[in-house]
Image (cartoon, rainbow, N blue to C red; front, side, top):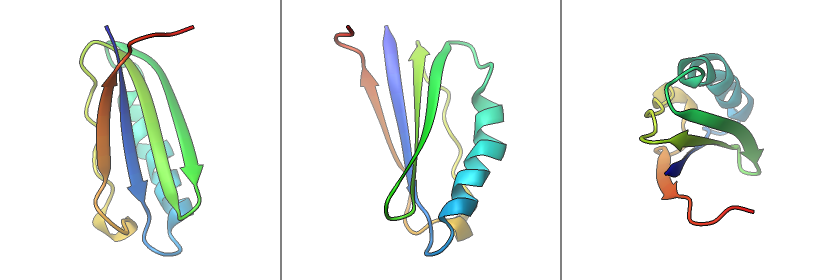
Length: 86
């Protein structure tokens, strides 16, 4: 069973680059090499949002919250089970 875990954070005003850097420097190294990790993708979006999608064979490893000063609102998290892939 493949599970996609989505982690999305909105940065405090003017701190989007810092939030993305925190994810690259802190989260990605912590997740890489975890048992069951199949793929990861880091994205950014307007509104200083950062999105990390990870695909797992089994239970996803939780992603930490960034330092509170980087956030414009609490982190959102969702998990999805793969139903169909082409």
